[in-house]
Image 1 (tube, rainbow, N blue to C red):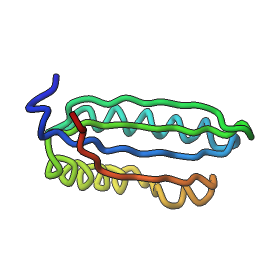
Image 2 (cartoon, rainbow, N blue to C red):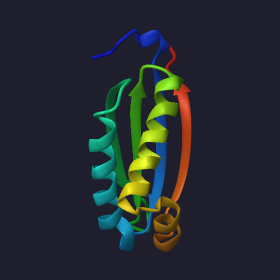
Image 3 (cartoon, one colour):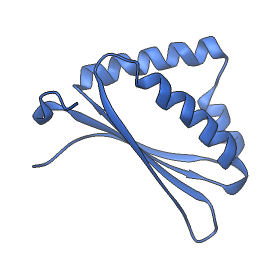
Length: 109
């Protein structure tokens, strides 16, 4: 469902994940994707993956939200859920040597 698509925003993450962290990373991504689908303002998400020349995972997620305000609220809810679960994303990324490039984009016509 695309609500007022001219104003929707895309929250795009690109992760570089070494082979040894792939399974743990994908398990966490599944948890996160299932969570955000329940949040107000969420429209849809897609994920893409490929292996680089060294066999490491390159993983891209695109979550479409109704507005930047919806993304802001979702981030707060996700952070509260992480705290409740005792999950520290920065620690996991450091431990597994995962890098991330994140941004909020508007779709061009």
